[in-house]
Amino acid sequence: MQNPHSRPAGLFIRLLCIIFLVHPLCAEPALKDKIAQMIMVGFPPNSDFEDTLYYDIAYRNLGGVILMGYNIQSPIQVAALNARLQDHAATPLLIATDQEGGYIARLKGSNGFAATPTAYYLGSVLDNEDSTRFWADRMAEWLEHSGINVNLAPVADVNVNPSSPAIGYRERSYSADPHKVAEHTGWFASEFHERGIVTALKHFPGHGSAVGDSHLGFTDISTTWLEDELIPYRELISDGYTDMIMSAHLYNAHLDSVYPASLSERVITGILRDSLGFEGVVISDAMGMGAISENYGFEEAVLLAINAGTDILLYTGNRYNDVSLVAEVTRIILQNIDAGNLSEARINASYERIMALKDKIPVSIVSGGYLPETPYLLSAFPNPFNNRVKIRLSLHRHVYETVPIRIYSAAGHLVRNFDLPLRGYGDYEIAWDGTCSEGTPAPSGIYIYTATINGQVLSGKMALLK
Image (cartoon, rainbow, N blue to C red; front, top):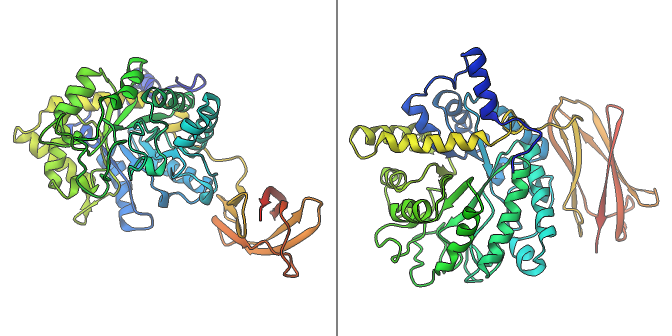
């Protein structure tokens, strides 16, 4: 469900077109610009290729960016990053991350958010709608405030093999019951939709039975896959799910005797679109994973994935042989259209689906994310902690002063004090080892931490558990 308090970006842009006839999206885009909308890339921070990313967005019409864990340092930092990315884009960006909860969560306690339960815990231990919705809403709020408008989750894999290295072992599946999986993934997606955030079911046609990991190499599920693994997709699609579905790099000889699912027209177009009736966007799993990179050439994989019916090609980097990956993929697709190996109609179909998806996202999320009213944010992680906690002060305003950090017991007694020198905006932190000023261990309990900056006192609570 779309956020009722936000205007869709697509509607806003169309109104500009009608009134002023000057918005850059009013004109029919060039073919190369449509192709660039079919690409989503990650980027290494603090490198020359971070600069290349901004060029790709501004001048090559890049469609999407994925944030990995190393791109996220704090709530203020990631919100500012995403605002900067969107500011460069004529066509609003899809900014994605993997926020499943549990082991696969890019926003977590170590970067200023909080730890979250696994899908298995929610679906198989608690199996409670309120709990699943509570945690989904909490994570959706983080993404909304961070300016992240796509969550590459929830996992719709059925827990056929609890020891499956990529899924069951990491507790990424809600249940061994496919109907339970459908329920929990539906509740999860619904909470993100309430905040205007797009979701992506994964990994089609089902990774839960695999004895291998497609991140590492060729993964054959021919003898382990069950047709029941399609049930979560079938039920959600029949209920009107039209966001995104991520294809898996899995080989199943019974579905396609030649290609893995992500490169298979029989699987993507034949099963997902024709048989199950999915009308939304198909995004590939990362194209650099071993199952693809070790068995197919770069250009070959691009051509096969698009002809299979994939709308968005996902890459976790933005470099290819020391040039822009976006430029290279665009060149490959244009060259294959000229050679008759791809049709322009195929590109147009994906472009229209992608733009329809972007129309769902409220302007509040595509226009640069959220920055808190206060220029300072004080946090502690992990919280609760056992023997060491980091207290972080995040600034999005330049400050040059020494800030006193004080730790008090719940009774108000000063336990420890630190001085934290600030030298501009960014993130600063100190570590506390749970000892008092005189060196004796502090007892278990609740502690108050404070920082006084520009005359403003910030504070928070943390729990020491021994």
